[in-house]
Amino acid sequence: MAALNTIAEETIPGSDHGEIRKLLIIFPLTFVTLCFLVIIFPYEIKDPDSAVYSQIGWQLAHEPLKYWCAPLWQGHDNDPLHPELFIDHPPGMFWIIACLIRAGFPGRKAGLGANFLFIFLSLYFLFCLGKRIRDYSVGWAVLYGYVFSPIFLLYLIRANLEHPMNLAMLAGIYGFIRSEESWKYKVLFALSFVLALFIKGIMSFLLLILALCSWLLFSRKREKLALMVFSFFTGLIFMGLFEIWYLRVTGGVSFWKNYLLFQGTSTLKFGFSFSHMIANFFWYLGRALFFAAPWVFFLPLAIYKSMKSDRLFLQNRLFQFFLTSAFVIILFFSLIARRADRYIFSAYCFLIAGGIWALLYLKPKIGHYLAAKKRQLPLYLSLALILLTLLRIYFHSFHYRFIKF
Image 1 (cartoon, rainbow, N blue to C red):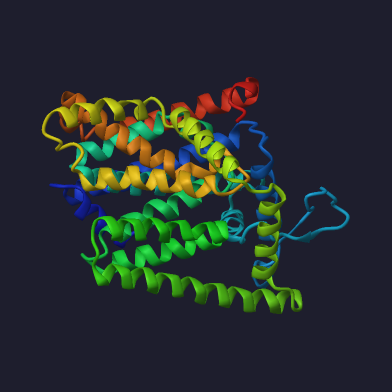
Image 2: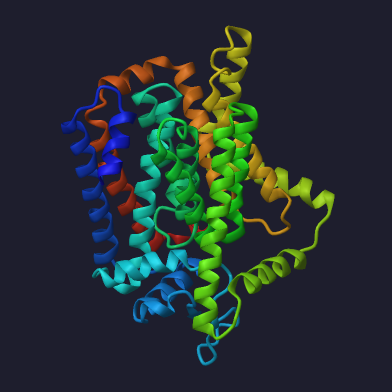
């Protein structure tokens, strides 16, 4: 909490301790409120991944800690009589769910509580990134844009890996951007990479790829390159320690070997061709236009206006990085035969942030209004999240076909 306090003071211009305390009180209270809502309402987890992850986390909570490295599940054949080791992903998400259950969270809903936790932490770092585009008002505009986007509304109440992975990406990028200012930002980047590693395994290297893009395009300093190398080897050390733990618990079974074999087999099963890659790229572009709407549609208008005038809008380096990151993420997953909307989750965030910056460039009065209302914005956002959660529960319970993606 103290570290978060320090970062918040550096992030918000002109903020005092009272303003920081206000932020750090309102958001935890909103988190508790959202958890309370999904507990008291008969919310049934319907998407397969969320149901499986919640079940595994619940089972893990009732196991001794030494077995937490090797969770069991019913397998892809859904056979409860012959449980098998879960090797689809590392167990990081299950640890969070199990910890919440042990802390007293109702077991079957703990996955949703973990989801809300990752959402609020992601909102914080998204605000930090948005604020660095220009000022406080831009940070809040980016938050509101993200909250009122299709991707956020559809994934508001789930228990899958997208929000924790998105947190790792946003926190990691923020730490990398500010890594020259303090050692704590270097630690933030390294820990974000480790978090991503234990959430989605090999997909965590996408964070290093984005950091490398930032280094190549904007700041070719040895210190940042050294940070990437340090984080890479830190990740390898954690992988090695986890492997030793796993080998001891399972009697010689290798997690990383079986995980990589499973992921490789799953990818090769779908085949690969250049035409398929091109099709995937345009498929993801279409998804980006929908899930980052309506904010993404302001981008071409702002780019056209800027090119016709002073080009100041286009010269914002963080804006350039957001668009570059979104493109790299889409291109990265276009190379993989399997495709899903959720794979490019962080790309939606970057496009939304860029689209909001475009909107503020086109309509500067919106930024002035947000600056004038900055003290009320945390409360308004909290109320919006509560209302959206209630609406999401209603549609999930009675009109699920409209939100089934």
